[in-house]
Each structure stands twice: as C-alpha cells, then as structure tokens.
Image 1 (cartoon, rainbow, N blue to C red):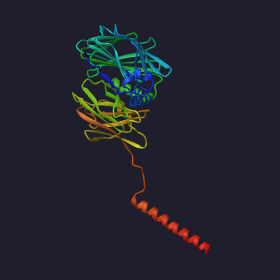
Image 2: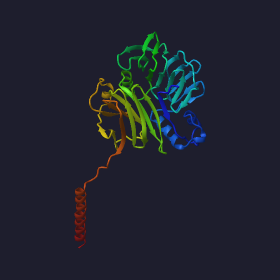
Image 3: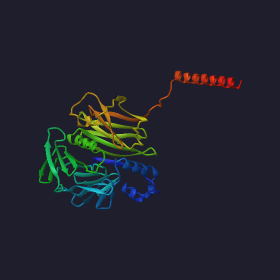
Image 4: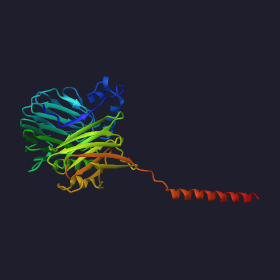
Length: 388
C-alpha cells in the first residue's frame, strides 16, 4: 500500500468538550483529554489547520469541504470555506482506473483515500491543499474547473517540478505542480498524466482568505518548485503535539523530533542536495513572536540569520546563495520561511527566546540610590529648618 504524502498526529482529546470537534478529529470520547481540544482550537484560530469530519460521502471542515466517491475515486465540488462563505474551486477531480484498497480515513486535518497504486490526500487548511501520489503504475487524473475559470496556463521545465499550471476564478488564484508527468488543457478541463512513482499537488488562495499577499507569495514559491516542504506544528500542554505536514520535493524527507512551547526540532534529509524553502508555522502560544520574544533558528547548532523581507525570499530567483536565512511572515500565526542553500541532512532547532527586560546597570542603580539619599537628606534639613 502506498504511504500517504501527508500526516497529522493527534494524541488524546477531552471528553468534556464538543463531540463535533472530537468527531472531526477522528477521535472517540473514550480516549480524549483537554490538551488536544485546546491545541485544535488554537490551530484553527491561527488559520493553520482544523479537523475534517467524514460521513462516508462528504469530507467537511472549517476550511475545506468536498464529496468523495470511493467507487470511482472522484472528488465532486471542492469548496473553500470561511465561516458562512464558500467558494467553488473545482467541479470534479477523477482518478482514472481508481480502485479503493482500504476505506477512506480521516486523521485530524487530513482525508486519505488509498487506491491501487495511487493515494489521494486532502488537507483541511485555508489553501485547500490536495496531493496525489502514484507508486508502481502511472495514472491519469482529470480536473474539471468551473466554467468561470480563466487563465489556465501550463508550463513545463527540465527540472522538478516538470509541469505546473496556474488558474484564476474571479479573485481566486491557484496552482498545480506535477513532478515528472505532463499537463494539458482542454477548455476548463486539465488532463494530468502522472508517471509511476510520481506526485501532483494542488493549492489555492480563495478570494476571502486573510493575509492574501503573503499567501499568494507562498503559492508562487510552491508553483516554481522553491517550496520544498511545510510543517504546521501546535504544542499540547501534556508534552505531545499536533502537526500537519506536506513535502513536495521528492528528494526531501523531513520529520519533527521535538515540539514544545517555545521550542521545536526538525530533522531534514535530502538527496540529491539542492537549495529550497521550508515553511514552518506555529500558533502564537506554541512559538511566541511578539515584541517580548526573539525567534532563533539554528542548523546543526549554527545560528541562521534573520532577514527582514520574507517576500524577497519567496520570490527570489532559484539558486544557492551560500548562506541560510529565515524570515517571519506577518500572519496571525508564527510563520517562518527558512531558506536552505543545500537541503541535506541537518537538524533545525527553532526557539522563541524571551527578551531580557531592559533595566539600569549596577552603576546606574547606585547613582539612583545615592540621588534618592541626597534628596531625602536635603528634604529632612529643610523640614527641620522650617520647624526651628
């Protein structure tokens, strides 16, 4: 069976909180506790990820909803969601030759359907991320966009990703990247030919999304192949954590080793080595990035310098700069864009370090005490003189 290209780790959620939230997280009341419910709420409030609910026909979450036919491997009506607002992104997605090998499952923020030699993974997050991965056989995937979709443009390259597509529906924009296969457009229908051991990913920036400029820059980095992977991490009060992960570059593997409040450690392995961007996001409580804290990132213990312009990193021309760097996006969450000149085996440590409160030094404190003493003595003399 093909392993899914994304995962969400959810551990223990509270029975005393909303049953709907538990069901969306794929959890039962027998093994639930408060830390996971708290972490899920913080993740959703930070626009990172939220849990799906699957009733056998519809996968629905706070950010994404669609119908899925297990018999045909078809997605029908992919909608982006924002409260009472919905926006149709795709009419249908059909995986030709799909044969289900195990029932679809929801694991936290991911919906996973494993078919014969192909897997489909959807993420419940604001950019409506979908992933398709083949194993021993090639597959053809047909994507039918709404009739109002325009600017369907395909480009091919000699390096990964070998094909990409952009589309526009009103004020919504989106991208598709395909590792080694080909893309073709017929009206508003896209035909994707995936080779064996290939991958395709879809993501969009809906018209109602917050932080639109930065999310569009992430979308463009994704389309160009510069975005190698992304991890959303939320610490729990019992020492565990929730995570939603997506890896796009086929030569990269990345895992979270430690995630706690104010600290996280990630391990990267890549072959062949090349440069790339990694997006790492936390809710503000897990990794505070306010005026009282400083974000510090090290690679194998060596500090990575921070740069002030994250958009420059996201739009920079591909090619090694010789020096790693990171930037912070101005989103509600703590979102870090890390540039690695070589995506090789390394250990990234991210910390939120409280800044020391500015206070007077010893000499200043002594001078202040002396000044208070002098003023007090003068006041005493004046008071005594007046009485006499």
